[in-house]
Length: 430
Image: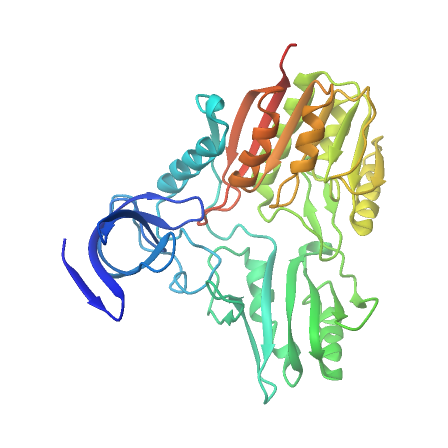
C-alpha cells in the first residue's frame, strides 16, 4: 500500500469491498494506524483503485483518482452525466449487482432475530426510460437565460444534461422543452413533470422570483397546441396557484384503470413495478382475512383501490387534502366503498376492532405509528417503505410484538441505491 500525503490528505491504493446503504462503495484501509472505512461514490465491489481520501471526516470520504482494475459488477454507464447528476448513483453497476446489494441492505436493516427471513426480489421490466414523473430545477441567470437540470450530486444546483436515460420519452420531451418557457424571467424554482390527460405532460411549478408574462403566455400556447395538458404555477408569496389548462396528473392504477393524482403530490414514478407492489400488498391483505383495515399515508388511493376489494371495511388516512379528494374520486370511479379521512396518519386512532394496518410512510418512516401498533391488538400489518434504514428503526419497535410473515424487495428505482420494500407482519401469540 503506497501513500502520498498532500495538505493533510492521503492517497491510498485500496479495494472496494461492499456498498453502503447510501450508495457509496466502502474500502477498509489503514489510516494512521487505525483500520477505518472509507466511503467512495461511483465505485463498485471488487474495484481496485487509487483513492484520494479525506480522513478528517467520520466516516472518511474518498474519490477514485485512478481505477486500476474494475470489479465484476462494474458496467459502462448509460448516461455520461451520471457522475455529476445526483439522480442515478448506481448506473455504473450491473442490474444483478444492484439487486444483490439491495437485498443485502434490506436484510441488514431487519432486526437481528429476523435476518434469516427470505427476501423475495421483484425485478424491473425496464431499467431505462421507466420514470413517468420527475422533478427538475430551473434557475434564471442575471440576463434571463433559463438553466434546467437535475440536482448536482451533493449540491442544490441544476446540472444541465443533454438527455436523461431513465425518463419516459414523453417526460424527457417535456423536460427538454421547459427552458424556453422561463426565458427572460428572474429567480429559480422546482418543476415537477408528470403525465396528465391523454398521457400529455403536465407541469407543477413552484417559483421563487418573478416569472415574466410571456412565461404564462407560452404555457397557454403549449396547451392550445397540444404539447402539454396543463400547468400550475405557484409563486412564493401566492396563496393559490395559477392554473393553465388541466394540470391534473394521472397514472395507470394497479388495477389497469386510470388513477387521478393530486397536482404536485406524491406518486410512484415506475408504473409497472408499482403495479407489482400494489398487487403484492393486496394479496397480503386477502391472506390476512381482515374484516376491518386501516391504510395510513394512503395518498390518492394507489393501494386503496385494490385493498378496498380485499377487506370488509377500509379506512384510508391521508393528511393532504388534494390527495384525499383524488382518492375519493378514484374510489367512486370504481364503485368501491372505503372511507377517506383527512388526518395526520402518525396520530390517527384506529378502532379497537381493526385487524389489519397498512402503512406506506414517507422516507422519514413512522416511528410513532410503530410504537402504537406494538401496543395494540392489531392482528396483521403491512409496512411499505422506500428507505431500509428508517424501516429497520421502526421494525425494531415491533420486534417483540410481531413476527415477519414475508419480506419483499421491488426494484422501483433501477440505476439507484433506493429500493421499495414490503414487510408483512403477524402478531405473536401471547
